[in-house]
Length: 189
Image (cartoon, rainbow, N blue to C red; front, side, top):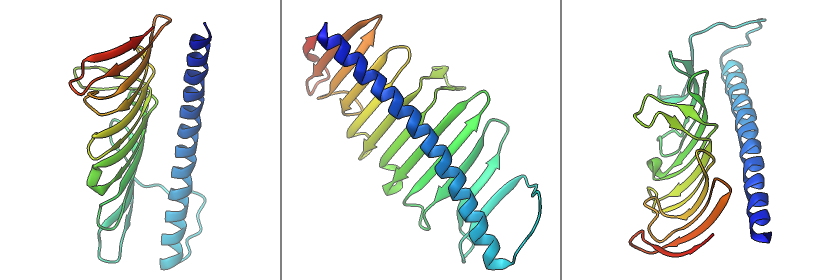
């Protein structure tokens, strides 16, 4: 009984942290856009206007490379940020039909963090649940948390081999330890 309440408390804490990360990501994106616009405008000249209308905002470096882009396509509105050599990248996207997501990438995408509020996709899977994924070396080391259709926390690897999986299906919490072949080595319900 105590293990179930501890697990529920942990899940509630993860959901609370997930919501905080979404707000933090949104505020950070707004702040970055404001700083990019202010920095770019002050370099060239001072523009005073009540409104600025554009289909796309692009921030270039001195040699013309794209460092940031704010735009809307027919699916989502996205803010994309790139390091000068594109080793590090980040994006924040929102869309009525496709939900909201935040992606942070380093080492040309080998190390990444992804936060999703849940999205409808055009993929055969059809739905990505709200979740968080933090990975290193293309998923060799990984922490994931998903909320739907079952709450699941995985600490280990992208293929789940040699990992610990905590899940809750229909109020039946389970902790599994998987061996290096992905087979269940130990289970507690």
